[in-house]
Image 1 (cartoon, rainbow, N blue to C red):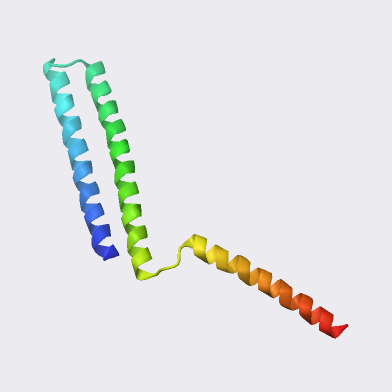
Image 2: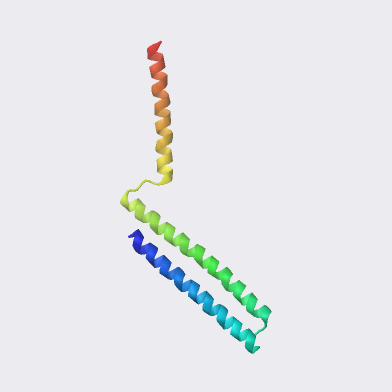
Amino acid sequence: MFDKMQKSLLIGLGALVLTKEKTEDVIKDLIKKGEISRDQGMNFLEELGSKAGEEKDRINKILNKRIENIMEKLGTPTRNDIEKMERKLQILEERIEELEEKTQE
């Protein structure tokens, strides 16, 4: 399932790169034809880049949430779960050492 999501994401990124290149070409053509100024073209590309970044962040949040839901349904422990277990294990090990020291006295 992760492989399918990864492939879909790569296809989307590929399309985004092509779209960006095509958009840049269109803006360059418009500048050459004098239909827009260089500043207008650069501002448009900057705004487009900013919006693309925001959209990328939004998509990443959605994907991360879906992955978390899948992992939860599968019963996969989270990093936080593992850290909690490690702390509990450390406490138990310390208590065992204390008990062993007491029994040796």
